[in-house]
Length: 510
Figure 1 (cartoon, one colour):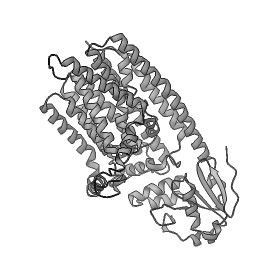
Figure 2: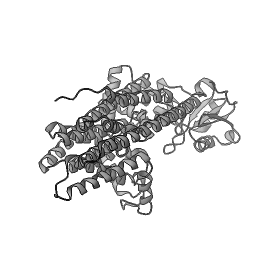
Figure 3: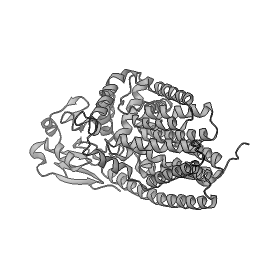
């Protein structure tokens, strides 16, 4: 019989949507120093695709993100430069909706399998396991689509455990192929269906489907395959972060610390992982008497736990929390599958309902408080960054934007450098002529035409203002002008540093 729609399954998807929109409203615009990388890079990649050029970004690879941005840019019209913020906001909104829809789908799949609401809502905790999900979800980058992929993968496994069929294989293959095309670190999660599926015939079909979906999304990256292969080979061989260090694959002196940093950082993930192991142990004890095989929910649970562990193990070479977001987000589905396994192993349903409902309540209350704190942090950073505007407050000065400074021109310049400055001529016409840029790994000082001598800038303008996200970057850029910056005025725009020579610090605007 067809399951009746339950409105409670919309509660957490709608809470997710509301949280993301509320947080984004506090954090915009995208050209602020804490947003511009990588949102503008993916914007440039989308515009590249519309021009028939290979995408700007291939290191993740990030192909679906850039295709989505290309679609948003095409639907938005305009030149892609004057309406950049609108394009990024529309692409971000589409990601929010995709994630919320997948979150509802996962909840519905769990409720069909469990016949209960609590485990379904526990599964829907996926984006709330860590605030990193919501924080990175604001950007136009792979992470929001990795959440989408993880939710679809979990839904496919839960549904396949209930009623195996071709559609669940297609969904699992799509989730893994799409996720890996967004970011290669998602690939270890492809282990989950291999352990969950019951036969080699279905496993081979799943692998073929995942490979086909991956190839389809990666078609746009064909011109980049050579440098992409070199990049990923270097990444794999290097023992340090991002392919650095000796070519020994792993630096065992630092790797255990990196693994522990990722694995033990999130309490809700640890609780879910421990409950998953306990549920599998209870199943093993229940099967011991008649030596029965693992049940489908047990195989699905084992698959998710193994995939979480392997992804964290892979990312421990580069121990940053956002690289393991899919593994952390799967804690919600792990809790739901733990319920299924424990219930089928005759654990008392009232006890399960009470314990898991309590866990759900604690998680919702804790994460609601965390969302409020994150909103306050983003609003504070945004207000601080916008309180000083060099173009508005120091219009006669030369403006030098050092590494990761808040400015539309700086956002474009920093990220357009990855595409060979394909848009430089158009951006020169659109950006202020007194803007200059200093990127640490490029030439010391540049504008849209190329390198510029600091002495020429000093001779042309009565004052110079240098802005950077960190004081060290500002000092280094100021030092290019020699004695002029021996005793500059020092201003603050939130977390950013502004050094001014030849003028006073402007008063911050509210």
